[in-house]
Image (cartoon, rainbow, N blue to C red; front, side, top):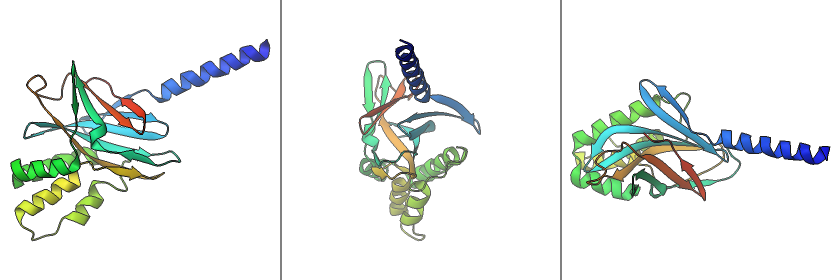
Length: 203
């Protein structure tokens, strides 16, 4: 009887601990609001970007793998839920084409400045396979402005990434706006990664 009761207590404690570990944590850094959520050792940090590009709202994402397994993260797994609408983010290739067609060189530079400001405001967050590495690998001085803009877009956009244990990545997800959802406010972000759901708090 005592053993059974103890077993139930331990099970309850484990369930409470699991629930607590899965809670969204909100904080501010350098005047910016961030949300972070950890499941099975994978931590996802999000913050809204003030920029809107050609009918798309932007959310900056940082992902750190503190587990012992690989995780695959891709932008299409990010959705913004607003009332009865579910707005899925577009792929990195679509982002590059979008900015090539509709974004000016000045727009991309402004976007990069905003992105860096958000990224560097996250305490102790330096990704191993993220924006900095992509920027160094893609930007060549002296290239035509159109190609430079495309390269910068490639560095900013979150791409499909297989994250090894101890590794991390970051990027911006582009979410299409509609007549009903003209800005990314009043809703919340949901992310599905390898069968796990990350449900963030409403804005």
